[in-house]
Image (cartoon, rainbow, N blue to C red; front, top):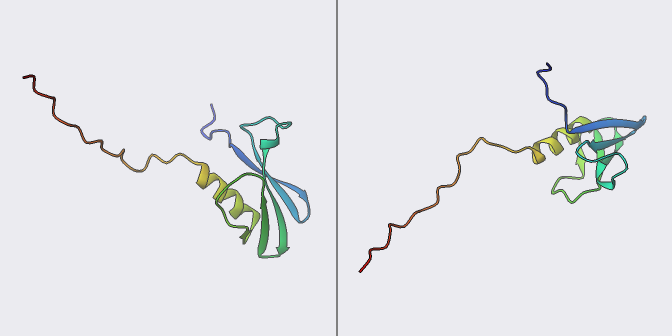
Length: 94
């Protein structure tokens, strides 16, 4: 049994300066399968064209930074406690 779960997102190189980020929650023929296209501008800078409505930057230092950011934004964090809901005392019958 594998200790590492299957990754939801994948960074795939298309050409020497272009990558795509795929979301494996969707089938390859589904338009939602491709999350972003990443283009190398310089050796230390890439530009991202988002194919989903994500509140993320359009420039990063590497394609791997883009993938990490997508994974971070879409991860479900259980690090904080749930918000307490105030309760009212029961009504008294008169």
